Length: 431
Image 1 (cartoon, helix red, strand yellow):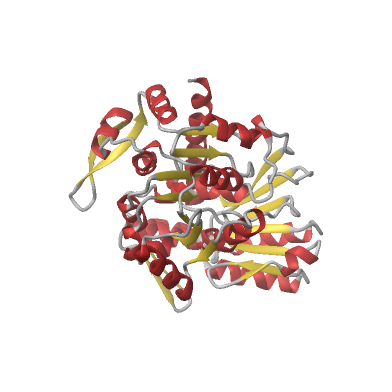
Image 2: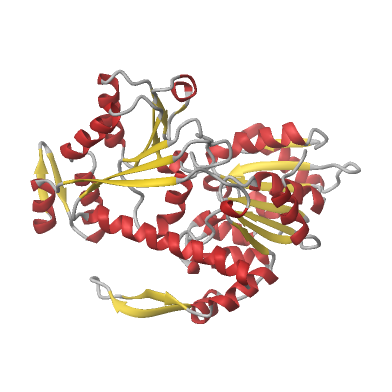
């Protein structure tokens, strides 16, 4: 397997380190860097944790490039998991035996037997997915005791520097969460509507020092534009007016639409219903989507949040005679995308924002956006599905936004998270 110069450089910069983080932009081949580092570390047992949609990609990668590996196991499958746990019980491996086991984040914490692993290499693909320190997958990942750690992510902060703590812990930086906050995060205490006090982050400090510590503990960074010249990215915001229903709900926290009642009992349900009123209940946005659809015969990629948004858009596509592909929690069907130049691919964020190569298309429509500053990573990942190696055309991103609504506020938060991530990459190179 031949590596690109920037991939060889990554391995050279981390030579001799057994805990590393390759925070390389999407499309720079972190899969190859990570697997080559795994080979270099030469552990008998290797555990790869990734998203469910990426399991088969990792299996194929190892089978196609490392034929000499003895066992490549998808341990989401019962027989493979039993084989793997049986292997662990023996604790005696044939000479030069190498095994790679692959599992997804949402299943791994349901397999406590894996915590018995010893003397192994742990690799986390899209390691930003353990940013939420209270999530079960994050807590479980931190319970492992590996000899070696490899972290891969193009968006390590998920838009917030405090989200680095779990990953830094795995890299061997034994700083407590509280000490990390005191050292690098500026915050104030605010009383919530429920009468509790909560931290409200207002900024960051001592960032240069944090970058030096990151470098010391094996974290290296690389942006795409340092390596290759990709086509220009152009964003276009398409605004539609807020509906009477939306304005009524914002004022009263209640509305009845047909047989369904939307009641904003608290801040979370109010935000949810405001988003729905800007999405599946917004006829002006559906009209704007239809107009975009009719304006081109090119392939279109469309990202959305809610199932009803998908159903509404699919109906419009069908009436317009557009072939449809679907990627969501139940279906992954790219047949129309692969075969039809005028296809529309409807993608739910959690199912398809990471890992897919969709550079046959050069246009993405954002029917709705992921929520909040902490969703910056999934938004940035979604943009990279078309803006990657192999793309030769200018990439266009169309945002369908309800004017003066929660959606415009949300997009501003996503931009803020992107600025923080970009600054992390930039400052690291300057240190």
